[in-house]
Length: 447
Picture 1 (tube, rainbow, N blue to C red):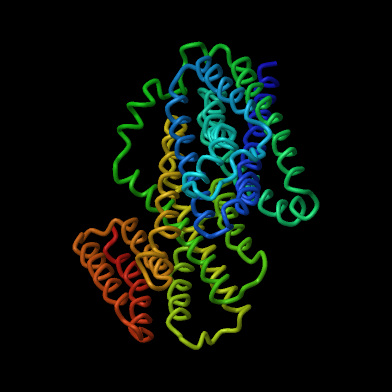
Picture 2: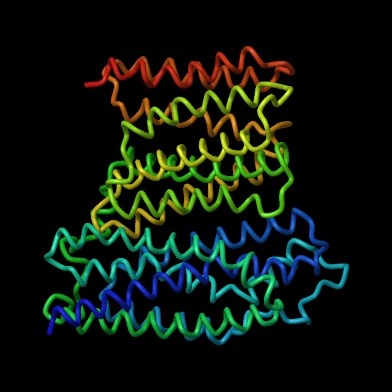
């Protein structure tokens, strides 16, 4: 009987995570398409939307991290209140009264419309993934192998996002009006809210002996203290790897859609590869192998750098797109594979997701907001090609620390120097060759 209840609770939790991730990925283009015409449809408006969603995502992960340390009964009550408050904002259709008059600050207007239309529902959706995963960790209290597999639910959430990425532009957008899409999303949110509440009740009933009113995540009675004792170097690594994947995604997407080919929906390919790398790396350890992806990154990043340094763009369009998409997949598999290898135990999973969101936000702000104003070219792309080599060197744990210091110094100085050059074909090739060669050379110093 207990096993049946546990299986039912796990199925409910998995369904909740899938639906929440699906809704999370659908709502951004849905809301943006509704309000962009109100504010002129400029890139600045889209950037504001992205910043708004990223800030809410961070707040949601912070909420999940703090709430997951409370007794399960407290979590159930607090999260149910959030879900009910979010349901009160449905449907997610902007009120015509919020349309700008022409005299208002457009930035403030965009943020006000987003907050009034989707604020609480989006917050509720983005908090649920990590929170439900912490409930599954409670469900498998005392079963270390099953607890270790809780991260497969993170792979499931990215699979749901991948499905939403394909379904929206090819199925929903052509077939339904924006109003119908908003109503359907709101109905989906109602289903999600019911699933979330039923899930926590099912988890509580499945393990009443191990999940009392004062219980916390098994094996981590002081989860907050344990999270605080996480090595700072490990947390920095999480931030760097999360930022690397985001910067590479945004930089490659911008480059292939603006410099190589202006093809409708081409942006879907890099984003799909990015999500696929999360699915593979967190589904099972068998998908990521250092012996395969480290050499792939070390071969593909110089090739991508070579293409960037050739003014004639000598490759055919299809080959160039293939090169950069393959390189992006290799970089994302490296970044997310190392994240999966460095993931903590279930007691710290909400802290792990919070730092991943923070790193992703930092990478997004760098590539989407800062880089276009700081650089006069796609220098965020060369940066994303150089960083994997640095991270590999860090992970190789070289005995002679001066190797790391000298290499890092050369990269920083060299990168700053190349920014000032107009013709950098030969120098850039040498630069990328050194990026690839140094981590390989550092293997000789590895303990």
